Length: 277
Image (tube, rainbow, N blue to C red; front, side):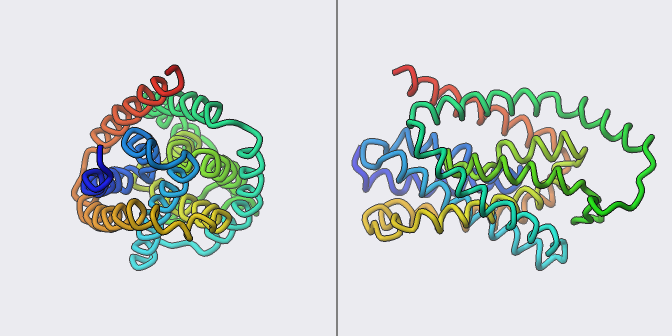
């Protein structure tokens, strides 16, 4: 298919994916990568596609974090901690990425996404057990407990682990780490999707930004940026703003979760076909 015909399709995909990614907290990278591999892999390499996906994920996450800042649901302490962990993690991820092939990377993504969908499917059962455990446990003030948005208190070591995994996944796949971040926040911290989403976006924004800084050479590729990055970024900006108004009206989080699971499995099937081809 001609690239000029693909551009409007990519804009629509960017808009729709960013809406779902913003509402769910996953960031959209889980769908950007498979969609672009399907449509433009004949024109651009996997590394170039990964760069574009990271850029789109960053733009969407940054807008969401900015909106949280405006609404005064922003924790500088949390952001600082995430940044301290993210920077060395991205360097480590880039090193690991240089050692393995694209095929291995795709297999890693398939395994991770499969685990994620299973965890999301069992989220209600696991979250209830975590909440019951928290109610039975007397919470005392400790240096390792960090107060975040919505007045929540989260273990610092949990955030460190989540940020580390998010950074590694960002550099390896360009997905922004969202597919792993949200399940971990939901399952290990017992948060609701509304509570976990701002934290997930914060981790995604910082890890994606650092990854982009280390991939600066792709910014000079005018063809890639004019044909793919710029049009899709426009779609992401519109989609993220639309999602901001939509998510406040959604009462049933189960609907979002199951739509997300279905879309993730579509991505998994596509990547399995690519790996076995």
